[in-house]
Image 1 (tube, rainbow, N blue to C red):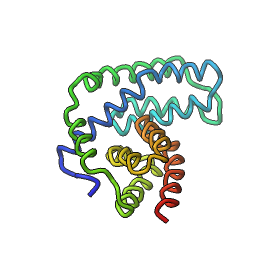
Image 2 (cartoon, rainbow, N blue to C red):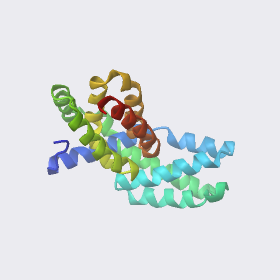
Image 3 (cartoon, rainbow, N blue to C red):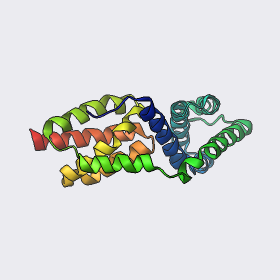
Image 4 (cartoon, helix red, strand yellow):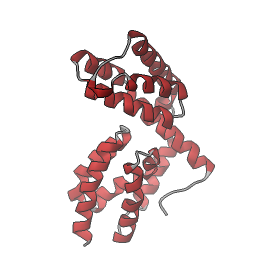
Length: 199
């Protein structure tokens, strides 16, 4: 079985999402501001759109609202973002990062235990691999953060198939960065690799 739906797991899963948010967005406002300054409205729009989704995943409605407003001002590759909107976005994002900063500092013994369990029970047989990939696909396709619960199993695929290790590493990185669109593209490549192996 690939998941556990107990309340403790849900709480730990939410903490993991929050922790990944902090890691992913630590310097993201600077990247967003530079994109605006450089006239790369497409990149700025993508960052605002992703931030809006991720703010919902961490249950921060105010940040989601501000990101939604900014995103709407970047439609059609035109920059209509006001200084007030930019200031609001920076303030809300920094406040969120500050509130979750402790997650990077605390001892993540539960994460270590998950990694230990994963090493003891890697995903090896074709049926389990296909089940994992079948579970992962709709989550990535819909941009659901629930896919993060499968990270340890995905990492174990690299041990099973070293030839796919590089693409697995890239997939994991995109998932941890909450870039589920890019992760889905990598997933399709990974699925094709495993179909070729287990056909």
